[in-house]
Image (cartoon, rainbow, N blue to C red):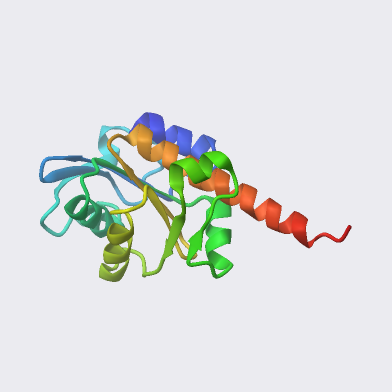
Length: 179
C-alpha cells in the first residue's frame, strides 16, 4: 500500500490526503484510514474491517463503496483516486468516456461515468455494478475507482484512465482551434 500511495501522489493522481485504497482477504479488507496521507502510509494508516458489516469510524468514508465492490466482483484490490483530467471529463456531461488512444481502447474499452454522493449506497451500487464489466469508473465530479487482482493492477488502471482522459481533453481542445 505504501508503494502505491507514493506513486499515486508522485504521479498527481491524488493529493496527499485525498483518495484511498484497500486490499481484500477473505471476508475482510485492509483499507486506508480517513484523512491519512497516501504518500506516508504505514501500519497506523490502515484499518482492518469486515466486508459484511458497517466499517469502523476511522476507516475511509468511501469504505461502503469498497465493500460493495468486493461483494459484487471477484476483485481483490481497489484504488480510489482524484485525477484531474478524469474529473474534468466527467464534468463535461459524458455518461462514458471512449479512450482516444489505442492502449486505452485495448485496456479499458470505455470508462463509465457513475453518480452518487460520497460513501452513499447509491454510489456503492452504481460503482460496483459498473465494475462487473469494466476495469475502472469515473465518479461524476469526484474521481476514479479502479479494481483488480492486485494493487499494481488497480494502480495501472487508474493511471490509464487518467492518461486516456488527458489525451481526450487535449484532442477535443485541438479540434476546437480554428485552422
